Image 1 (cartoon, rainbow, N blue to C red):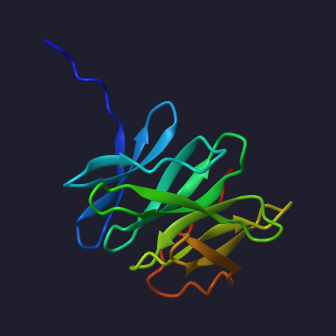
Image 2 (cartoon, rainbow, N blue to C red; image 1 turned 120 degrees about the vertical axis):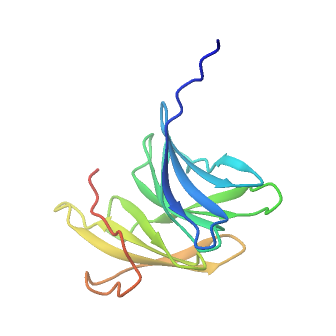
Length: 166
């Protein structure tokens, strides 16, 4: 009798309409996945210069996932993945960048439409975390603008902002 290899996935988030999910695969490196019924599990990839990606949240319709890319030659960086083909489930991952003077960023929540993300950056040598808000400015390229927020500015509906540990 053949034995199945161990597969270690952790469900991170489910889209509001239930059509998609973000999951984390524990293997040689951490890999972010998007699941849909038509396409199954599909790797999101990672940012150039990083070796792993961890999802943090998924938009209501499942078209956008935010999270953190890390490892490799680049520092820990927040990302936003967006779908480019509904038919194949393929998408593209973009860096959200870091705030001026910061070394790391992590995206932990995304708006219903996937056009806004929040998370934290470190604030420099003191390693204090600063909440940020990132807003999509160019839908065709996935580019956006990141701004620092006061720690009490996130308001209702934004959850799961965590501190940076790396």
